[in-house]
Image 1: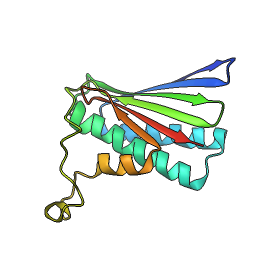
Image 2: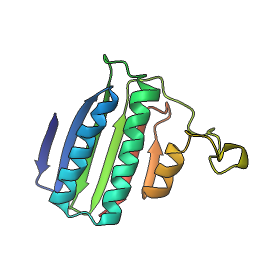
Image 3: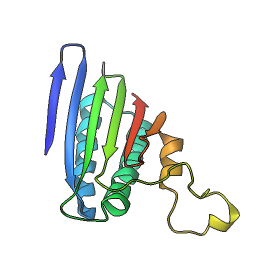
Image 4: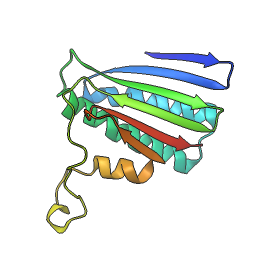
Length: 143
């Protein structure tokens, strides 16, 4: 379910709650598609937002909430003057130490099938900020 609030200072707020199931990613993709049409995302912004949000939501479902159906992943979006997107993605898990992740570009990690999500997010978003617990991520994009 998506909730939207418009404010007189050219700010719009959106919220989306996702069940901790892998197929919830479809709801998030539909949300990004609607935003892309409404705000006229370029192909590059669309791809970056979709990739980053997919990584963050999947991490929240799988690693944060451990696919516990009693827990949710929350997406909040603030759109400022139709020029800037600030997404907050949070889960109900214990969090993790985002400062001590293995380097996915290190030779010993190149063939690993996982472990690139945070690296990718940091490369594609204009800004990436974790809360101290590691269960909430703020992503900034200029549109």
